[in-house]
Amino acid sequence: MNIGLGLPTTMAGISGDLLVEWARRADAGPFSSLGVLDRIAYQNYEPFTALAAAAAVTGRIRLATMIAIAPLRNTALLAKQAASVDALSGGRMTLGLAVGARGEDYEVANVDSRGRGRRFSEQLETIRDIWEEGKIGPTPKRPGPHLLVGGSSGEALARMARYGDGYMHGGGPPRAFAGAAAKALAAWSDLGRPGRPTLWGMGYFALGDGTAETGAAYLRHYYAFT
Image (tube, rainbow, N blue to C red; front, top):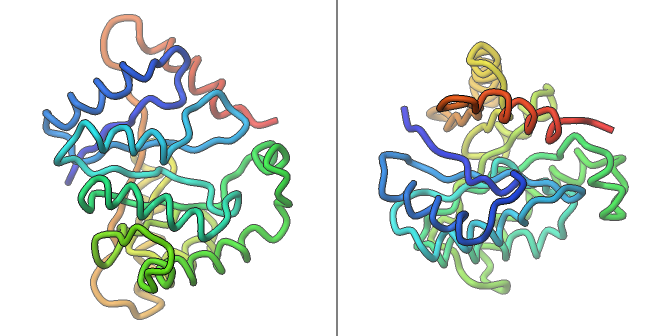
C-alpha cells in the first residue's frame, strides 16, 4: 500500500510559498503522491497550475488530480494540461477525472450539467488519442498519464472499467472505500479486463492538538452543497 498526501490548494490562507514548501517536504519524505482537488466556484488554486508548481520543486513523488471535473473543460485543453504536467515532471502525472457533484461549478462555468455523464464518456474515449496523435503537445511520457476515473454510481464504475487504468474513491471512512473498491473490482472483472485496476482512496486526518475542529470546519465549508 502506498500513502500519498494532499496538497492544501483548497484551504484558506495558503500562500504560494507554503504550497511549494509543502510539496518539497512531501517529496523528501515517505509519501508516494501529492493530490489536488478541483472546484470552480471556490477560493482554491486551479489544480493543474498547482501541480505544475509542485513539479518544479519535486523530483520523485507522483502528482495527481483527485479529481478534476472533466466535463467543465474542453477536452483538447484538458489533454494538453495533463500532458504538460506529465512532461514537466518527467512522467509523474496521474490524471483522476470525474463529473463532479456541485451544480454551482457548472453554473459559473456556463456549462449545462445535463448530459455530463455522456460528455465525460466521450472525453475519455478521445483523450488518449489526443496524446498519441501528437498534434497537441507537449508529448507526455508514453503511454501518457495514468488515468483514474471516479464516481460511485453503476454508470461511473462501468466507465472506469471501460476507459481507466484504475478507480479513485472520493473520500469517507475506510468501510466506504472498501465497499467502493469491491464494486470497482467487480466492474473491471465484468468487462473482462485483465489484471486489476489501481485503487486510490482519499481520507482526512487531523494531527496535533486542536486540529480536529479546524479540520471539521474546513470540511463542512468545502463539502457544503448549495
